[in-house]
Picture 1 (tube, rainbow, N blue to C red):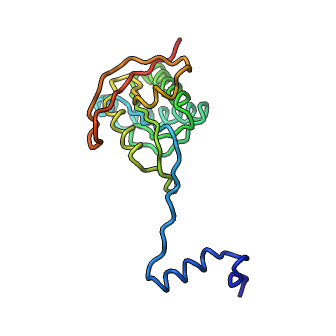
Picture 2 (picture 1 turned 180 degrees about the horizontal axis):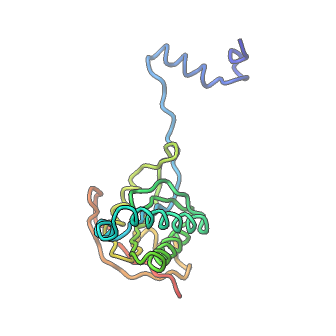
Picture 3 (picture 1 turned 60 degrees about the vertical axis):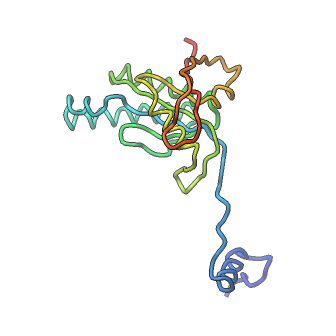
Length: 195
């Protein structure tokens, strides 16, 4: 039944896939969906010590408020939440300046409202979209950059600084670093937005 047997009607790709698997024993894998994006990781600094100080219930309430603040800022800056990472976030943006401004807003709000420091790491590169998740070396680089950020710091790769030229965002050179598992040395910068 149906019109799939007519090559130009129906789901011809499904029929071709079945024929290919019958003849060769395997289906072809589709090309991964790759896009250019700015990847941001955030992390609450000294969260374990703060959780121990507050106790489980107050800490959980603080995390819920933190998540609300982060999601609010992601919405304001057109960021896309990929997932939470315990006490942090993984998000993507279609532009690095927007990502930097979002990271600064998250840092400020979390400090003012919750009294805890946030650090963030950003990198721009190609990522693979896998359902609701993302993968690729750009994700690993952003995670490594975030791990090197100090409390209250928004740390970015050199690529990000080059892409935001003329945006009014200022940077301080933090030197070259080795990123665990990533080849070469990477020049990193602390990002500042004018007051």
